[in-house]
Length: 280
Ligand code: MF3
Ligand code: CO
Ligand code: CO
Image: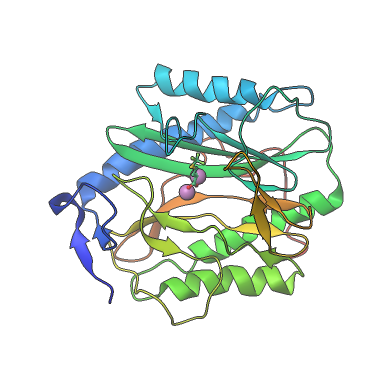
């Protein structure tokens, strides 16, 4: 059974019920998410061949500190970095290191900043120098799948409509959807109910209601959907080592549709990439 509750009544932890946030919380989320989006905007200038991903981590920690925020991943369940940097066949939770980015890489940078107790969670793909058309096409498909999912977010629709929008489109493009990781309720808790699956069937799952806040963060592979987690306990890679991409937004359900909290203030939602939509 699905239950819903007013978020302010029970702020502590993931209890499995879907929280409904009020307008004051939406305002808090705007601030956290816009700071996260501005951080992702500024990272566009930093990403280049030869730059170690640790430099990205250093930047995000400094950016957070300078802006009265905290990186949510730092010390989260034993994760010791301020950001995730997932390169090429790394699906998610790539750990920043001294290894430099290389020309032709694609890297997902996933930032979550906490501002006044609200979590702003978003990620984008960044091309490193000039990338292959196949990599560009995968980023384009992944971004478009997220936008199609966002189009489904309105009261009365169901979680299955979100998953189906992503799956139907990605699979029609001969890509696959990762099933081992999902989006999540977010707000005053980092990872909360409900799980937002990136596959599913229309009309199934919990009904969307005004006040719900969650992430949508599809991971789309050029090859098979299967992933494995490396021995560091975090880094998730495609089993067939095929290229993978991810974009993530934090959204809130409104009376009439949805608000995307993490849109780029600088028009850099797809940094370094101009999608001509000819595949769409
Ligand atoms: N930001 C990721 C998400 O989208 C979570 C990263 S948790 C970490 O949910 F511990 F891996 F950093
Ligand atoms: Co997330
Ligand atoms: Co994230």
